[in-house]
Amino acid sequence: MAAKLKIRRGDRVIVRTGKNKGRVGEVLKVIPKENRVVVQGVNIVKRHRGARPNLPGGIDEREAPIHVSNVGIVDPQSNKATRVGFKTLADGSKVRVAKRSGEVIAEKERA
Image 1 (cartoon, rainbow, N blue to C red):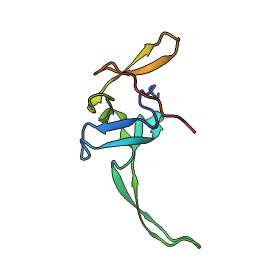
Image 2 (tube, rainbow, N blue to C red):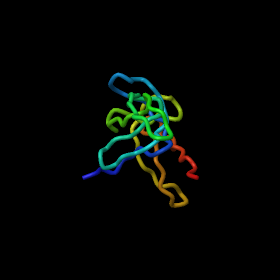
Image 3 (tube, rainbow, N blue to C red):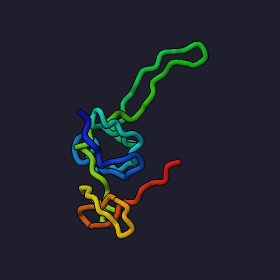
Image 4 (tube, one colour):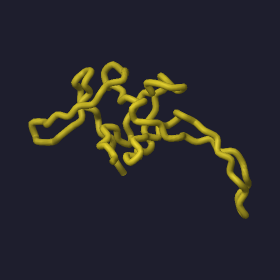
């Protein structure tokens, strides 16, 4: 069963473990069923693409999913990894909050 992830598309995250430790990037895609995220510029893999009638073959580099436990949201104040909490504001809206600094994590505008 998929868990409710606290990381969303558009968040700035830092990789905590693995070969890409310390890299910072934006979340491009969230895969809740597998508890994985795709982060821009992190976990680059090569895929061999066969030729199509109107496209040549070649080797593509793209980001592969990384487990959500290996990334942390970047704190807006300290630029370090932080956990995420929730808080209800005075106007009744529920927002995500960085546990490290207590600052509200800004939501990206979705087009």
